[in-house]
Length: 258
Image (tube, rainbow, N blue to C red; front, side, top):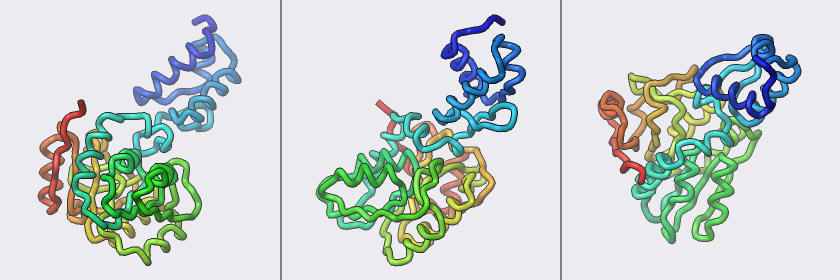
């Protein structure tokens, strides 16, 4: 293949990564008729945009749980808005809510009802920024080392800061839900934080997009029995709903996106 314009070539590589294909710099250079340095520049740019993970000699596609927060915020916005609206309807006046890191919980931050005397605690940078714009909501921000993929603080310092909070309702970020109804995450520290968050909360709720169903990650967070409620998309498969309900969770379906 003759040399192509950089953006056209970069888009072609991005398409392959989006289809789950790993790419090698040597093979791409030969295919597109350019130098390996040009391909490495393409891969660096794609990694900076959150579209791949650089490895020696090439790049790997990212699973949904490995995408940085900046990339997840742009995906499935209509579905996340529908889940957020359904979740916001469960909130009670005067509650202390905890919004865990996650792009769906960011949508919830924008959907919270007004003038309810709410307090929102979060470990997520983008969620804190969204809540800060709400004069009717008191904000508590947990600190620590910010993980750019998770989108917030999940280190030991953040875990310790859960101790003084009497959380009425937490919305735990869901990275993966196995066919057996087990929640997991690709980040060890995030798994520890989520387990601590569930233990510290009176009611634990998971907002689950359909793309997370039937997937798994290396680090276990909780079983379906640990969630009081799960809110799923309108088209969530029946087997996922069964796994959650058998675990004791109350399952609600969000309306189809407009």
